[in-house]
Image (cartoon, rainbow, N blue to C red; front, side, top):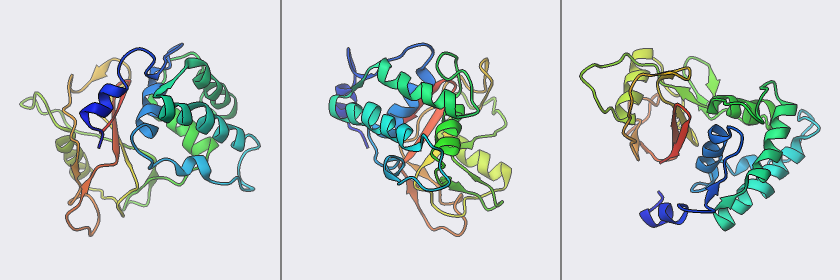
Length: 222
């Protein structure tokens, strides 16, 4: 878990990932994935195989050398480095407009993880489906003014009557919102640890720390 000192170290001028041309959705996602955790590092080192695209190694190189390395070494990545990745994603995936338009984090994740790097899905549901992230679907509780991630997480899984088949290496959660204009709750209180006891099929007590949640255009690592 990042400490208060860790957070202060990445605040201020020439810290974090520099924004440029509606890049906030991508900047905060990359920051969350690689600044404080190594859980996604396998993406940087998987060797190319016969099923990968021709530019697989170039995307991997740009991600590792232009973004992750300077982020961890200097706590800062300039926009020109990020633009190299954005141009590759825009050219190589089915998601267009990644160099200039507003996008949702899941569009970026689908482009990078599913289409280009062909990563193994993080989540395996007992319904047989696999996914890189889970979107919370809940009914709004008028009496709940400041819900926690834990509350919404449990409500969504229990209402949907599904479970995870196994404990995932990481858990990316999409907060309840629809499009760019409607947010079910104006604020959601982050939960630094998730109790997933009732969500994992046949699992005993387990708390979860490697998860990312995003709400609207913002991604936060807890």
